[in-house]
Length: 144
Image (cartoon, rainbow, N blue to C red):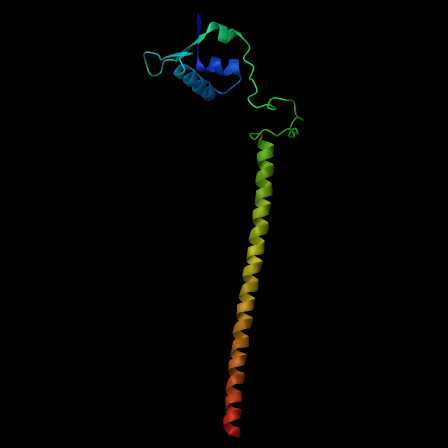
């Protein structure tokens, strides 16, 4: 006896996603254990024939390594995340990003001002050095 089910039903039964259910069915069909029955039309629902005893028995995963499947300390729980579609959260994030962007822009403007001031001071210093070199050359010629 077999049970005719959809990928969605397989996903719910085995606690996996629909794409995972499709892959599971494909692998099991390749081994000759299940049978995939396509519809007559491309938009028809694909049915999968699963042996009834496999469908009704609880499918517990078996450990493959000697210590695999032994209880370990549970991973730390992540704090409850806020709904990403929550308008207040999005407004808060945009506000924070805007403030951060303004701070970066202000720092960039200040850096550009400092660069311009340094370039101006460098040009003044270079002119002073050139003037001193001319005077030094004139003094050396006068002494010779």
